[in-house]
Picture 1 (cartoon, rainbow over the protein chains, first blue to last red):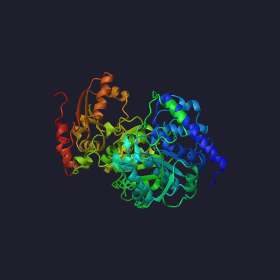
Picture 2 (picture 1 turned 45 degrees about the horizontal axis):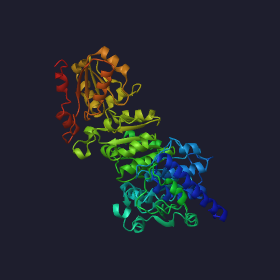
Picture 3 (picture 1 turned 180 degrees about the vertical axis):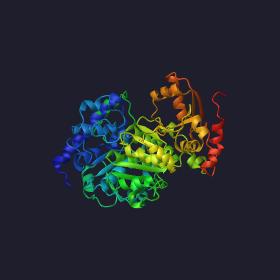
Picture 4 (picture 1 turned 90 degrees about the vertical axis):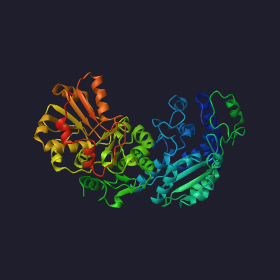
Length: 267
Length: 295
């Protein structure tokens, strides 16, 4: 794994701001689940720019690294990164063809997700296919901490461990919120780290807004026989101090007058 | 080893072929464990995993008890297989009357209604296991299919089916009255007609195993040949083959005397054996002998 140079770090940080601005523009046109988009954006930027080998040249190929955004309501973050990499056109990103959840007809979207609890099982299937066919690629699935309410996720943990899918990386975007309230209040996860450890999975924790920390942790990942679970500590609406880590503004309507203010407030 | 197991063993040599199950081996008893991906009792994951494999080019044969395969995992089937066009073969065991003595929790009697209305799915209820293999051999994975697994092995019927196999063909009889059926009911009626010259001359039996493939031309042809149609099935009325045929006949202004024999809107009364069920639901020689369409 390449080290992140100062130049690269500056470039990633610049993207982090630029793409947030673009997502606010998107929100002004179509509304969005902004809180969720901004908690995972830095992770998606890192994955596509430094970890995963997904680019314009190989995007249509089947045998490549695969990313599944199981928490599909953060689709604008994925689209923003795809258009930044010129995998999709900027006009398409802002067009009627994109909406609040990933649309399969758009290049770079491997799976239509959004119905929570689906994406991880799909990732398990792809990882198993790669393993059996000796395709040396990563499968990364990003789920939300609220998504852990779905029983199917825990079934996937069991299966991935039993099948020794070391090529599978499960990222939990732990922003500590789900739609209407904190995960603690809606359905407490208790000691999440302990729970995941009890599945004998390879547990890693990192700061989901710190590229140096992300790179440090991802650099150590090996395709052994143990699936990886990364708990990424993140903040809802990260980057906009005005609304960061607050219960409100999970969903932001296009008519919200504060959207312009968010742009000014962006850090 | 059954004909389906033989077929699976043969094709599973390919690393593109995946035999999956949610801890159900009714159709896979002689398949070695190392050839099967068993997800445990996790039907939703079963479908999610199959869709991931199919997306990358794998050919999946997905097994579970019918009711849990279809109903428990329905959301996954709808979104990940049907909507996203990841084609798989789903094989549900103990569907319809084959559930015999399990009771309502295990009865799968609405698959045509649920799966048959999905845009990229076919529904196939073979009369014998042999018919299922003939069908799968021609299956090209351009769509998904749900198969109600039928372990029945009727050598005489298999011979009839084997001749230039196509689903939805006539099985037996030269009579003017038409019977349309599928699955175990088809096989039961075939047996009755095969043993009875009078009934063979009274009826013609069509085996409508590929339920999602109804065509207008066929029914126009039928209407010319006969005015009397009996449809026999182990499925609830809603979404059933008979309901589909009624709509087709109505839309095309085809007038036929039609008697539809299905489960209505109730779970069926569990019985220990298939024969007891046929007796209970009057799918019998006596019923066919006494049947009068003019009543």
